[in-house]
Image (cartoon, rainbow, N blue to C red):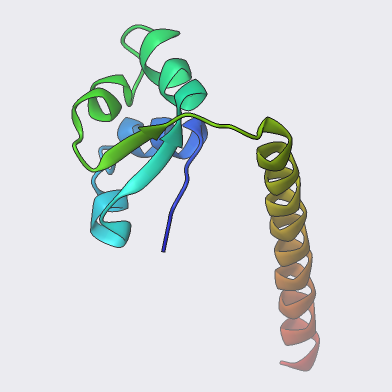
Length: 98
């Protein structure tokens, strides 16, 4: 399985001291160069900067098709919204039937 991450989860996990959880779960992650730049270069001292820069299991990759990445990101956001809706609906159903 190929896992690609954006800056948000990297920063958040580093901030709470759980950056290595990604390695435990996936072994290796891939990040676009722009994500590396956002975490490491753009914000000197930002949580995750040192972790991204030094973790051998984080592979930085250049993106050839930016449009495909943006489309995938949109699909992921829509999926997350749908899951949130389904979880909310399931919780409401459980509450009504309990």
